[in-house]
Length: 292
Image (tube, rainbow, N blue to C red; front, side, top):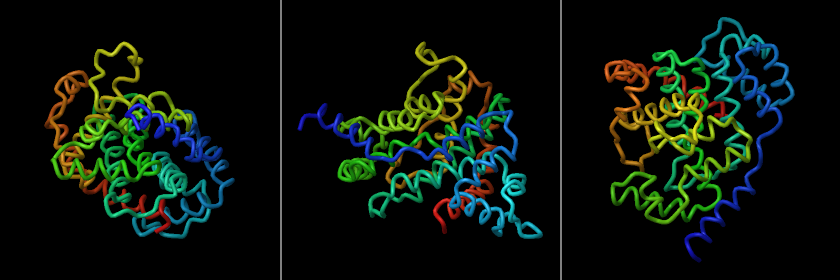
C-alpha cells in the first residue's frame, strides 16, 4: 500500500469513531459562551444520567472536601466551575467515544494527564497575559493532542510503530510520524475535530500547535494568541516531564511567541511551580472521567 493510500485509509477510519452526544456538544457550547449561567448548564447536564453522576461524585470527592453532601447539579457547578465541567464532560465523552483498551506501548491515562496539564497551564498563561477568554485556552490545551488517541483507535499497529521509533531513536512523536509517512496526529486530530464540530480555534490549535503560525495569513488574527498559548503550555509541560513516556522531546520555548504575548521565562517559571498543585486537581478529574 502506498503512503498516500495508507494515509487516506486512516482518515477514512475516523468515520468509525462516534460523534459527540447532543448533551456534550451543547454543554461545550455553553461553557464557551461568557453569557452562560450555571442553571443553563445544569439543565442540559440533567439530561444525561452518567454525566450527572460523575459531576456529583467529583464535587463530593475528598479533593473538594465539602461540608455537606451535594445532590443538586446547579450547586455542584458553583463549587466546580465551568472549566472543571468542561474537562469532565469532554473526558467522559472521549473515553466513551474511543472505547479504548489498554496497550503496553501506550498509556491512555498518561496521555490524558498530559492533556489536562496543558489545559491547566494554558489557562494560567492566558490569565497571566490577560487573554480575553482563558476558557478557550483551557479547552484548546485539553484537545491539542487528540489526534494521538485517534491514531490509537484507528490503527494500533501504526501507533506502536511511532512509539517504538520515538523511544528507540529519541525522536519527538511528530518526527517519528513524519519519517514513517503517516498523516500525523495534528492532521488526524483536526479531521476528528471537524467531525465533532468543535470550535474553529480548537481545530486550528490541534493542527498547528507544532508549527510557527505567527505570520500565517490563513489563520484568523484573533485565534493566534490562543494557539500560541497552547503551544507554550505544551512546551512547559514537556520540559517539566509531564508528557508521554515515548515522547522524549524537551523543546525550547518559541521566542517569537513569548515576545508576541509579552511573556517572559520568569512568569513561566512561576506557572511551572504551580503545576504540582494543579495536577493534584487533574487526578480528581481523571478518576471521575474514567469512573475510578
